[in-house]
Structures are given as structure tokens and as C-alpha cells.
Length: 355
Image 1: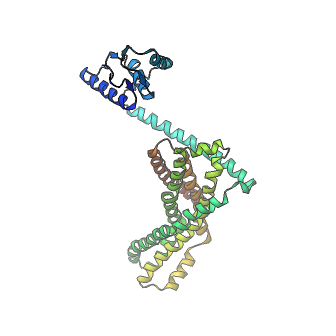
Image 2: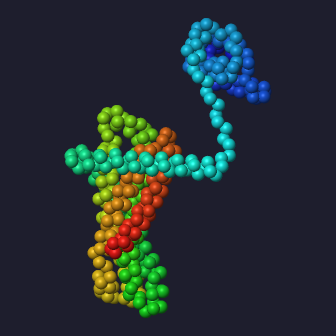
Image 3: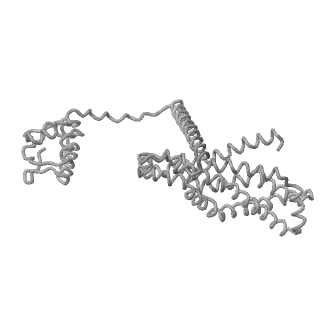
């Protein structure tokens, strides 16, 4: 193998041609690179050419014959570079190894969540002591996007859910002549369980994913590193306004969703021939203030979970555009899993205290 005698240059275009020649040579030689390279015609080269020469002389083990001293001097600093280790061969791993890797990943993720909770708690306490540290303008903008803009989606989901529950429960209850108790079933199920959960799931898919995508894009573009370089705490600058907005918006959305869900049940029952006042009296007699407060307390915790997990996954974003998609998916999945888990804990607690 020898370089082009006409040009005597090894710039980017010539380097690409030489690399193609080397590749063809390797195919002809059974996967082996050329062992001797005639470099006497080479007079100048740029960075790409130096990299190609080093790859020939270093990893490929070729001998560069006739190389000019000035070019050899440019290659000399790279002689001390360590050789690239061979890529490990992927072997089929046993089930025990897969379980071990999954356990390590779960423990690492749990540790990251605990560290995030501790750092956020300390930052939130500092912001409580000095409210001017909070970016209130950003908080209200996030609250508008997460709350006001989600009214239609959350309302429609709850309204249709109330109608579905009324339709499905009216038939079996009619067999016992207690159709009116459909109001009890719909109201209690929505106020205590389904209303807060559905609202939180809508926020997880709509707002939590947006938080992860926004912060993840900033992480990929090294904007988070720029904030740290300027002495700005990303936790106070990005996380606190979003978590505070989720904490304030979720209960309001839950109350709004509960009202529309019960309204959907009322609409179905009125269509079945029940007067509005009879349904209203049954609702007032069946629902206590503790039922309403149960859903509101859950929604407060769910709002913090959705916003916090979205911000955490955004801060954990790796490099590349695909990493943003991975973080968004992880934010939604983690939020829904935590919502259901925390709701199960609340159910056990409220059952124990008979609330």
C-alpha cells in the first residue's frame, strides 16, 4: 500500500480514500491490515491524516516506510498513548446474573431517589426561610401549563369515568331494587380513590413527562453544567418551582375532576328517571367531609411525587437525543408505579385508623 504520489497530501478527503483502500486490503488479506505502507510520497497531512497514520502504525501494526522526519515528529507524541482495549465479548448470561444486575440497578436508583429527596428537602427548607429564593414567576408559569391547560383532559376523563361507573353499577343494583345507591358508589369511589389517582396519572403523562423532557434537554445541551458554573443551584432554579406548582395544582385539579365525575354519574341517573333533588339528598347523606379530605390529602402527595420524579429523571438524563426519550419514559412509568404504591399505603393507613 502506498499514498497518492500526485498530491502528496493526506487531508480529510485523501484520508477517507486511503481508509477505504486499507479496508479493501483487509478484505483481500483475510481481515489483516497492510503490514508495509510506502509513505515516501507523503509531504503534508492534517489531523485526520495523523489519526489515520497512527491507526496504521499503532493498532494495525503496519510499518511506514520512507516517512518524512517532520511528519514522524508529529506522530511521536502519540507513541505514549495506551492501546485501546479490545471490546469485551458478550456472553450469554445466566438468570442469576440477570437478577443480580437488576438488583444492583434497583438499589442504585433507590439511592439516587433518596439523595434527591434529601437535597430537595434541604433546598425547600432554605426557600421556606427565604421565600425570595423561589422563582415565583416560573412557578406560576408551570402551574398554568400543568393545571389550567390540563383542565379539559382531566375533566373529560373524570366525567366519562363517572358515567361508565354509573352505567355499569346501575344494572346489578337494579336487581336488588337499590338503584339510588349508585350515587353512593360513584361518589365514594371518585372522592376517595379514583379522582386523585386519575388526576395524578393524567399529570404524570402530561406534566411529569414534560418536566423530564425539559430538564433532560437542558442536561444534554450542558445547560445544567452552565448553571452550576455560574453558581446557580439547579435544585432551586429548576426543581423547586416545578414541585411547588405540582403541590398546589394537583388538589385543585382533583376537586375539579371529582365534581365532573359525580356530575357524569348524576347525568346517567337522571337519564334513568331519577330526579336531581333525590340524587343530591342521597349524595349529601352518603358523603362525609372525611371522604373529601382523603382525596385531597392523597392528591397533595401525588402532586409532589409526579413533579419530583419528573425532575429527577430529567437530571439523570445521559448523553444523546435518545436519552431524553428514555428519561421521559422512566418518569411516566416511575410516577404511575409510585402513585399506585403510595395509594396502597394510604388505603392501609386509613383502614387502620377507620377514616
